[in-house]
Length: 479
Ligand code: C2O
Ligand code: CU
Ligand code: CU
Image (cartoon, rainbow, N blue to C red; front, side, top):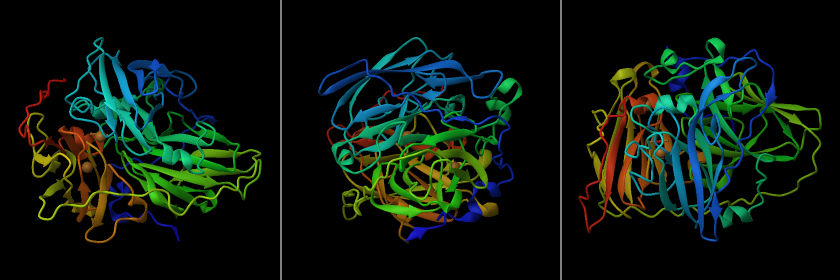
């Protein structure tokens, strides 16, 4: 089948919200889509890789005229793309030249918490670099890096602190997929901003406790981007890197997208769709096939009715590769009989948001789960006022599998490993989760202002030898 709907409850889309900021085309010339450079390791052996990730302030020529003051990783805005290979050990030096502390959160990476994971307990102060070491051991996937200081994640990400992080492995290498970075395998970071006087951003002016948004789409930091297509098939790696916006993606001529991967890597089977909705922090990899187009044609990517990225078709050689029906085996362990079922209730809007009736406490452990044991988590969105809103629920500490939505099967494109799932109003999504590392991990709504506003909690993954291990948690003193 070819799916032609967004699956989620239309009544909860963010455009039903009074504060909704519709996308508009910004009146500025088309420019080539920015493709961030690949981050070059400092040093490398067969088993180990050393690299430096540097959070830095800068200025970026986004629009004609004044440059925009921005922050980025190893560049002035967003970040150089990090590539990890599963099985290798990484030694990453985290450097901060910003005027304030930040953290480096590896969203979607299966690593120990709370320090390597880089959530809010792992501050890096300006001028005080730290090295973290971890082994990457998970399937090929599109993950990402973003700042996560509490409660300033929204502020940091709005300034530009977000980067693509690819994981590669031998299985993905063996499939007939485009993987020529920047040519037929391209990152597509979806964000939105409002440009104020002199082309500057102003987080405080645009702040909304239900999620900060702007009318101008920014794709990899580019306004009105154009990409030259030189191959018949193109792999787009979408990341919703926006603070709040949901993207409802579709192409001109209803060109079919074949989704091959979601947050945690390849889907068990490819899923064909003409409409794809992605909510905050989710990733989706899709293939486009331009066989019915010829040099000089244009294909346009829209979110709702606003064009956000133009593909200019050039000459290309025919590509007859055929995608296998089976892309990956998803082997999530079973839940033990009588295992605890964790409950997470997301409620409220604006300043009233809560998780399980409370707001986030930096020093409070809200839930516990044993290392290596698989348990259900039931995530409920009770927020049904005025149509309600979707809460994209995210867990640190690895990937989960979606079991059901209100007892029904998950959507066809969420059958792979996930770390973020959007929950409709009035819905309970059951997931199963196993942690592979001990530590303290956060779980939260990924509308970043909800997270900063307290729709976040944390859990301890414990081991029998030290079930109440004390971690040096940070108090909220980041202001
Ligand atoms: Cu994208 Cu708590 O993270
Ligand atoms: Cu995360
Ligand atoms: Cu939320």
